[in-house]
Length: 113
Length: 118
Image 1: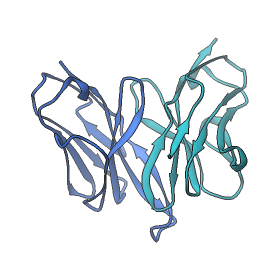
Image 2 (image 1 turned 90 degrees about the horizontal axis):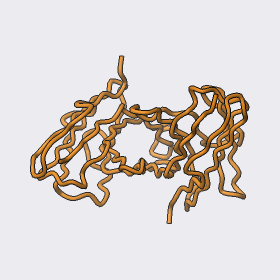
Image 3 (image 1 turned 120 degrees about the vertical axis):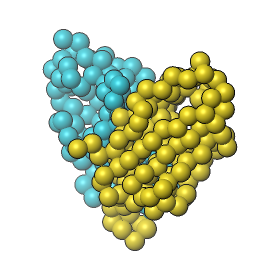
Image 4 (image 1 turned 180 degrees about the vertical axis):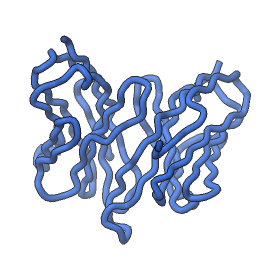
């Protein structure tokens, strides 16, 4: 079955600390992978995506993610977190020619000053 | 300019009523979607339209009826509202990257419409 697992429901980090949010997927076809961020009361904003090529992708707001096929993972990282990064983060998987994105349950990030 | 706009942003109504949520995108995208986000923040696709044609219809009660008058609009009408329909409904649109039916779709989401059924 197709699924996305985000093992961490809540993560709290201190401002300036590094961050890694985990994402594992189960998908039968070649996956396209996405990270979206949702600030309180807002819609989802695309942070970055992986389609093919370099497995380390850069996104907006200083985020990056690494696709590891052998581990079926697409973890999101940021070297130094800012208080404004506090939000809900969603990993999603899709496939070429297929319009349906499957989302993980999300990871809520809290940032301590 | 808002790329994907939904109205209303908030909707509070009684059980049994009928309500609609409207969505418009000005990105020129061919495909539009409705997603439902429940109280646990879980996001699940409900419908997808491509050039006004329904292409994805997940297991959704037939009280929910999407309508796409043109490719820039996708409205969601809900009949006989139930308590369990309370959620945030997100509209999204996408354009295929790569083309030819073998590319990927990158979704742009609206800000959401929070529906509360009392």
